[in-house]
Each structure stands twice: as structure tokens, then as C-alpha cells.
Image (tube, rainbow, N blue to C red; front, side):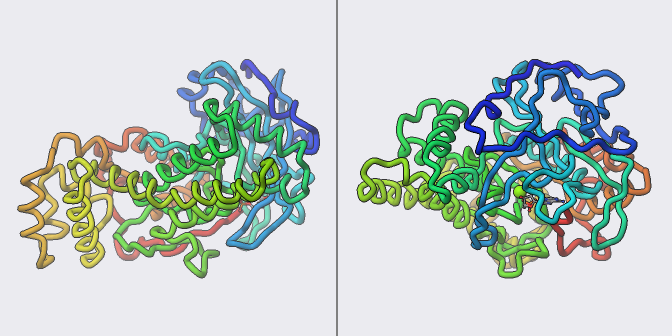
Amino acid sequence: MIADWDNTYARLPNQMYAQQVPTPVASPSGLALNKNLAADLGISFDSDWFEYMSGNKLPDGANPISQAYAGHQFGHWNPQLGDGRAILLGEVTGGFGHIDLQLKGAGRTPWSRSGDGRAWYGPILREYLVSEAMHSLGIPTTRALAAAATGEKIFREQGPLPGAVICRTASSHIRVGTFQYFASRNDLQALQSLFDYTVRRHFPEAKTVEDLLQEAVKKHASLVASWMAVGFIHGVMNTDNSHVAGITIDYGPCAFMDYFVPTKVFSSIDRQGRYAYNNQAKMAAWNLAQLATALLPLATERESAIEHYTEIIHGFSDTFEKAYDKAYSQKIGYSASKESSKMIQSLLKMMAEQGADYTLTFRALGEGTVDEHLGDHPDFKQWYENWLNGAKMKELHKVNPAIIPRNHLIEEMISKATTGDMELFYSLSHALNTPFEHPQNPRLGMPPEINEEVTATFCGT
Ligand code: AMP
Ligand code: MG
């Protein structure tokens, strides 16, 4: 493996991470390699690529570390989380500036607590597929460079399972919880370093904490609006899983909705519906309030800082509304206006009442077949006539995907992969590369049959 490496995070104050090499695995083999992404990042691999992507060989120039962070998990403060099974190899610089390469499932670290530092095929292949699909849908996200099997069994509730490692790439792995970790320890040196570093890497225009918060509000608002527009539910928006610069990170029990239910929750651990589909904006704002709180120690004038930060965070809901209206107006072929908001609300109401498939219904708008999904609704005819008057049909297929990673197919893909059959993984992966085109195999774009429906997703670490 050859790449241009830099290790800027590993040059920050040393309380911000631990030096940690991946733990070698028994018998690594390749599951998936993202050759296009490797080329884009100026990385070249030989036939032994899976040796590097499983952590058995270290690339020349990498300086592996595990990062420290804390977080609010479902609202409860946890002062120490950190990379319990992830190892940042360093940053590659041969493509789009500094891009992190991180191995997840690469063995124990000082933050593993009682965990084994490992992952099995399920979460690894799910993250690979879903994060790449997200990227192809045009939504900011970590990406998947490679997945390798470890050749080792790991033990979970379900029994022994085959182990795997993912190598993901990201514009950084700085979380809201990273700031919280140092703020809660009153470590101003690390907090200031982290702030300066985050500005350099993500917010080059920001001069003050206020500037950073303002930009973060915009990025998080736009991220959640784009999640909602494709029917995505992150599922664990804890502050440790909330990227400071508003990119999708930490694919756990995430899921795309099939039929539209605004309050939908899939995650088996989210019993209160804290991270339900239509609660995600509120939760992003809550996370940003935690970020603001964590940054307070950097302010010279505490009282006035509290006032300014609060105002910025309160601005989230307006910023979000605008991003939401923009995203949904595009989905119905309108420019954002009062009229388009009304059209969208009526459409979503009909969809919810009919239990219409979220993705297929929006797609059908551009195909002239939406009556197949909503035709039975008493308000449909009138709505459709009004809609036709103002809609620009041409643009619709650029924003309404024909295929999303559906739960039942992901589950099927995982259970096949554990028996050594990777075909569904590859065909889904291929189809999801071009989500605005119909897949060659129509089944990959279809909702589940009743007996195929997946009603809950598991963190399944
Ligand atoms: P997550 O729910 O994946 O965001 O993880 C929450 C915390 O648990 C993070 O600090 C992870 O690093 C840690 N963790 C998750 N799975 C494992 C594991 N198998 N071994 C060690 N730590 C883990
Ligand atoms: Mg996490």
C-alpha cells in the first residue's frame, strides 16, 4: 500500500489520543475494495491490500492512534468513550486535502472498556454499503475504502460470528463529543488546540467560536434536511456520533424508511423514539447546544458568550426550516415558497395516511405514475391537478432516487455474506452507485414483501 501520509492529529497535544497499533488477525482476506475511492485519494494497493485493511500490515508513513472523546448517549452524559475499536491510521493527502483513514474493528484500545475491539460482518458490510450509497445520493458522509474479513470468530448475543474490519475515510473524525471530553476535564490547552485544528480543517473562514457555531448550525441543518429528504434515520445521534462539521458518521442501527411513517424508529435501543425520523432536527440542535456549552471555556466574557451562543443555537430551527423547504421543493419540482410548503405538507399527509412507500412515491412524481401510490386518497385528485400546474418535471429524477439501501435487502445481504456468498453485496453496491437510475435487477429497488419486512435494526457491534 502506497499513499502520501500526514499525521496532523497525532501531532496535537498527547492527551487527545493514545498511540495504538491494530491487533493482528489470524487469517485476513478481502471482502470489498473501493478502487475508485483509492484512486481519488492517490492510494495504490497491491494484491496484499487486505493485509493493510485488516490491520496486519502498517502502511509506511502511518502513525496509528485512537482518539479520545466523550458524549451524551441518549441524553446521558458519559465522560469517557473514545475509539474503543477504531484506529486512525493517519491522513492521506493525495486527493482532497487531508483525509482520515480509520480502521474500525481493528482490536482493543485504551478506550475499549469491556468490549473486544472487534466487529462482525453485519455492521461492517452495512456501513460499507450505506455510507457509499449516502455519498452517491450526494449527502456528506464518511466513506468506505475497504472491508476485510479477519478469519476470526467473535462472540455476540447471536453466538459466534465472522469478524471483519472496515477502513473508512472522512474529512476528520472530530465529534461534538471530542470537544466535550476536554471541556469536562477543564483541559483548556487541548480544547484550544482542538478548536484551532477544527477551524483549519473544517471552518477556514471562522475567526471566533461564534463563527464556528454559526457554520456548524448551517451544516447540521442541511445534513438533517438531506437525510429526511431520502427517508434516512440515523438512529443513534448521540453527541459522540455527531460530527462537528455535519457529515454523517457512525452507521449503527441506521435505516431508510420503506412506507412513510413520520415518527418512524427502527433502532432496537431507541425505546423512547428520541432519534425518530421527525425528531432528528431537534436532536441536531440539542447536540449543537452541547457543542456550544463545550466551547464556553474558550470565551473571555462568559455571560455575553452565553447570550451569543444561545442566540446562534436558537437560529437552528429557522435555518433547518429553510433547508427542509429547499430540499422538499426540489423533490416536487418547485422553487421554495409558501405554496410549495403547502403542497409538500399535503403530499406527506396523504403518503402517511396511505402508508405509501416513501422512495417510490417521490420517484413516481417524475414518472407520471404517482396515482398508483396515492390514487385512493380522497384528496389526491385535487392535489395532483394543483401540483401539475406548477411542477418542473425534468429535474425530479436528479433528486428522487430510484433505489435506496433497503433494510430487508441489507439483512439478506448480511446473512448471505456470512455464508460466504457476497453476490448480493456486490450487486447492491453496484446499483447504489447510481441511485438515480433504475437498478438492472428491479427487485433491488422494490419495497419488502410483507414477510420480508424488517421492523427493528440493532447496533450489533
Ligand atoms: P457506538 O455505539 O458504535 O457509537 O459506540 C459507542 C462506544 O462504544 C464507542 O466508544 C465505541 O468505540 C465503543 N464500542 C463499540 N463497540 C465496541 C467493541 N466491540 N469493543 C470496544 N469498544 C466498542
Ligand atoms: Mg460511535
